[in-house]
Image 1 (spheres, rainbow, N blue to C red):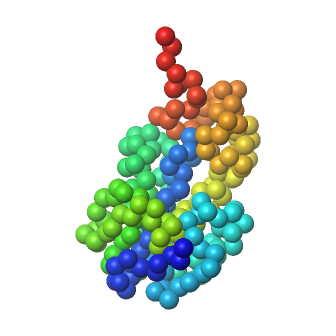
Image 2 (cartoon, helix red, strand yellow; image 1 turned 180 degrees about the vertical axis):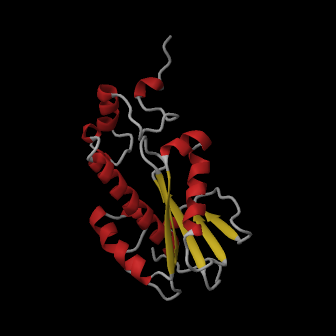
Image 3 (tube, rainbow, N blue to C red; image 1 turned 90 degrees about the horizontal axis):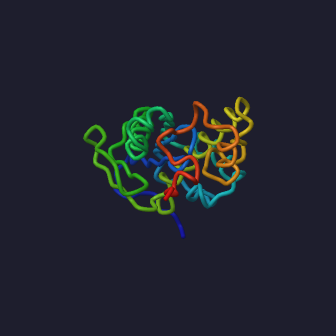
Length: 200
C-alpha cells in the first residue's frame, strides 16, 4: 500500500512515533519528522516491516531530506515513575520540542496523545503504515533506540542487548533470572515469567 504524504494538508505537518514501549530495559525513544510535501521513497514504511539494513539505509536519507526532525529519550526511571503510556507521550512531546520548524499540525501513531502547545493533532491507529512522516519517525525512533541498546550492551554483555534490544525474549528473561536486574531495567515491568503466575 502506498503511504500518504499528509493527513491535514497543512504546510508543516509533523509525524511522531516511539520505539521501545514493550521493552524490559532502556528508554522509550520518540522521533518527530516534518517531510517536504513532495517527499517519496519506495522503501519507507512502518519500521517494523523493514529489516535493520533497510532502516539504517533510510535513516540518513530521512535526516537529510526532512524539513526538520527531532529525537528524544525518556529513561527507565521516569517510565517507572509515570508509566509507559505517559512516558511515550512525554518522549513524543520532547521530540517535537527539538524541531527547528514549528509544526502547524501533528499526526501521531496510536490512539492516545496529549495536546502539544495548542497545535491541532490527530492520533491514527497504525499510522506508521499509513503516513510517510509517521513512518519516517518510526524509523528514526527505532534506529536511535537500537544504537543506544547496542552501546549499553558493552557494559552489560550478559543480557545480549545488541541482539534482543531489551525486548522480552526468552534469552533476555533467562539472563534476568541468571544475573538479576540492573540499573537499565524497568522495575515496574513484569521482568520474569514467574511474576505472571499465582502461587496457590
